[in-house]
Image 1 (tube, protein in one colour):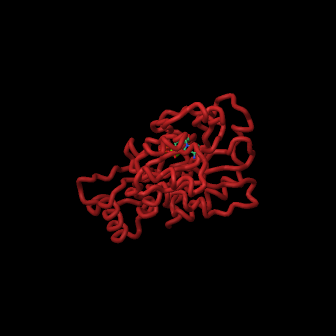
Image 2 (cartoon, rainbow, N blue to C red):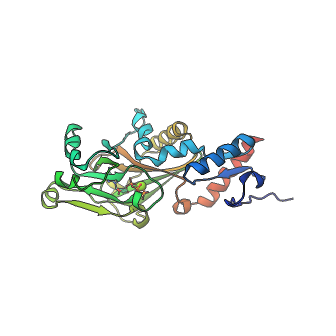
Length: 282
Ligand SMILES: Nc1ncnc2c1ncn2[C@@H]1O[C@H](COP(=O)(O)OP(=O)(O)OP(=O)(O)O)[C@@H](O)[C@H]1O
Ligand SMILES: [Mg+2]
């Protein structure tokens, strides 16, 4: 008989233990209640592969903890540098009036990208803004992460990871901010979720210094080290190249189980990955 792969959606209105049997469970629901259901199921069905551990996923839902592992990586001798933009966490109880002082104390340079601290899937948690001057910092609403804006020529690399497979897609991003512009603009520039609107830049005629993919050995090391450190198999990394450099990169965002529909060859890659999970078990 021909064996196939069957995808079954878990019915959230029924106890999970009464459903299945499953070989692999994929999930990305946030929330404590769901984490408990999955942990309970894993305990009772150790033979089932659960992707990925809820605690490891949880780590990516906070923009502070999300990038910690990248900051700790040591990728010297890997054809480039990968870091995290300098960032500062403004906690929930902090008053916005203290932000300019905190920013100066941390030695951070304007403009800054302000991002809500927690990523919970809501549109609001993806409403970012750029603060160009000190006064505009007073209008921000904590809790948030402030990141130095890194000029990157308006192009972003989305690095999709599915187990050991890596695929890179280029997307248009925010344009560079020049010194003259900084003198002219004031206030906050709010922008909604960029990733939904940003067009693919893969077919565009771009400056090769900006568009050239990050070196393969660098990506392979980054993906392997992050897979291990995060304990995750399915995620993507948003990475930018500092404008004017060949090999200085910054990771600005990591998402769990992103929309793989935008990844080339995703169907085959995903099926091969699922089959490898099942094969490795027997
Ligand atoms: N430090 C930074 N320097 C320059 N541009 C940045 C920086 N951080 C974010 N951006 C720009 O803002 C966009 C959104 O940032 P980020 O990915 O962190 O937010 P997000 O809400 O998690 O987005 P999404 O889930 O849509 O990818 C990036 O694609 C990039 O264009
Ligand atoms: Mg992003």
